[in-house]
Amino acid sequence: MRRSTRQPATAKPTAVADKAAASTTAKPRENGNAVAPDLGTATGEDGERNYWLLKAEPESRFENGVDVRFSIDDLAAKTEPEPWDAGIRAYAARNNLRAMKKGDLAFFYHSNCKEPGIVGTMEIVQEHSPDLSAHDPDAPYYDPKSKPSDPKWSVVHVKFRSKFAAQIGLKELRELGGPGRPLENMQMLKQSRLSVSKVNAAEWEYLSGVAEARASEK
DNA sequence: GCCAACGTTGGC
DNA sequence: GCCAACGTTGGC
Image 1 (tube, helix red, strand yellow):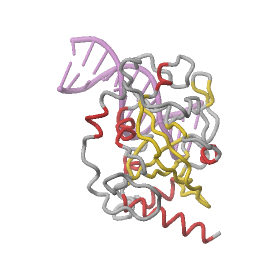
Image 2 (cartoon, helix red, strand yellow; image 1 turned 135 degrees about the horizontal axis):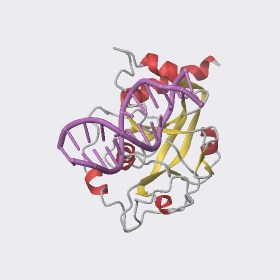
Image 3 (cartoon, chains in turn purple, yellow, blue; image 1 turned 120 degrees about the vertical axis):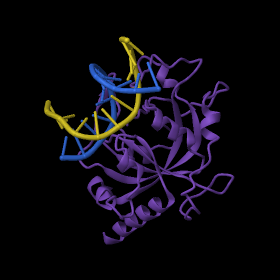
């Protein structure tokens, strides 16, 4: 996935709002997500919380003349809710974005880099709104097919929550994803090209435990 | 920089 | 609406 910091943090949902939003958000929440562990702050009105995994590239790469590099440290330095993501241009990823609720938590994954892996966590602080950067010819992920009257793409706003003492690398994730293992059904391992994927509550808790254990080893 | 996997597009 | 061709992702 790609992201850009170019979209102003002040971007707001407009009255136009995503037309498909109603249908995507109307779908039932994941049944697999039982009671959320007490790991965050606000939860949605229904008391449930969903979990996600979002990819960004921590190393420089130019898209339409713009460096799309964005790491967990870049997010940690932000003082305002950060729009994520000006670069999601695949429907499966977008639909996951649109299903996110305020208070949901997400892993931050470093992709397309020397040491890919999960490096920390963030919280969804504002639900989806149209990705207006898609209409900007100078934006890294300009999409001439998206019309301002009917925006195709979406962003959510996130805030930094934590950076792991040591990342959980892709190699380890794959080992944990073997038959009968804790991450056997993890979406990011099954659909490795998806830049926004679902994480179920058991996977979230398991990986949070791995991250904690890693911190105490240090 | 190679290329496998897989999502998207467009001809029919 | 099938599916071959094409484009992109992202690990290596």
